[in-house]
Length: 106
Image (cartoon, rainbow, N blue to C red):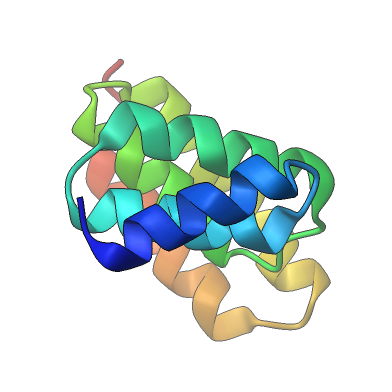
């Protein structure tokens, strides 16, 4: 484990309702390829925070790494909607391109 990973684990343990601590932990988990744990933290973050699109893209990355293309596509759909809602057209287009790259398969 990295020092940052341990730091964020401690933060989440002390403040489980802090969405930004969960987002930080999820990012560190993504860096080490702990996909299932990252999904868990990102889902908890997204349940508590009105993300502007980035978190949804990271959730899609983790779900895709686990072989969950439908789940990745759903996260990208939600990320696109959030990005447009917050006025981030560039991010929305990036997420749309990633969604298109997933194709239509399950």
